[in-house]
Length: 266
Image 1 (cartoon, rainbow, N blue to C red):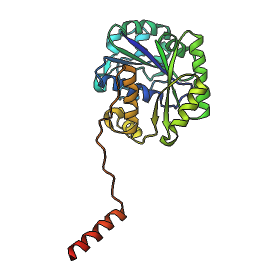
Image 2 (spheres, helix red, strand yellow; image 1 turned 90 degrees about the vertical axis):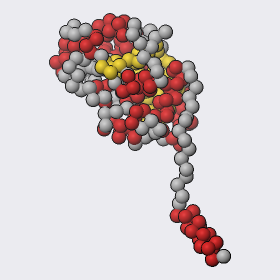
Image 3 (cartoon, one colour; image 1 turned 45 degrees about the vertical axis):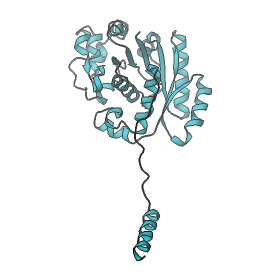
Image 4 (cartoon, rainbow, N blue to C red; image 1 turned 90 degrees about the horizontal axis):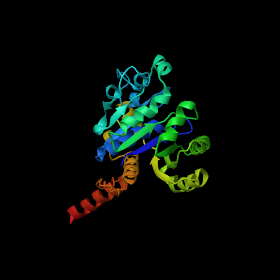
C-alpha cells in the first residue's frame, strides 16, 4: 500500500527540506521505493540540496504541460527518485499548481512512499499538498514563532480535510529533548515522531550536496532520522554503531606513565 506524506512547516528556515531529503533517502536506503516531490514551486530547494539545480526538466515544466512526468524524474542518493521544482521565475509563472494532483496520481502507481516537500507558510500553493496527502508531518524548531506557525498549519490542514500524523522537532539541544518533546505534544496536540539534534555535520553534508544520512550515517542527526524512518515503515530501529572508546585525558595518561615508571624500578 502506498503512503503519501506531506512534509510541512509553518515558517521557512526550520530545516523542512533537509528533513524531507534525508528522510526520503533513508527510506530508500531501507529498501523502499521512495519518491520525493518538491511542491514548493515558488521557492524550490530540493534540487539545490541534491545538486539538481540545473536539471533540464522540473516540476515547473510538467505543471506547465511542456514535458511529461517521466522526463522530470531523477535518481538521487540510495536510489531515491526525485522530482525537483525549478528555480526560474518564468517557470514558476507558467506552472499550474492545480495539476499537482494529476502528477501525484501518476507517481503513486510507481512507489511505496511519496514524500511531498510543501511550501512553507500558509498560501494557495501550499493547500493542495496538505489536502491530498494521507498524512502531514510538521517540522518544527523549538522556538515560539516556529511553534505558533506550525499550529496554524495544523489548523489549516484540518480545515481542508487533511490529517496531521505528528511533528518532527528539528535542531534540538540534546540535553533538553525530553522537556521539549512533552511541551510540543501539549501545545500542538499531536505526537512527536522524532527529535533531530543540532548537528554540525548537517552543514558539512549540505556543502557537499549530499544527505547527511549518506555522508555521515553515524552522526546524531542521521541516527534520529533513521529512527523516524523505521517507525514509518513499522520496524524496530537498532543502533549498530560500535561503541567508541572514551578518549584518555591528561590525568589518565599521566597516571599510567607514573605507574609504569614505578613498575620498571621494581
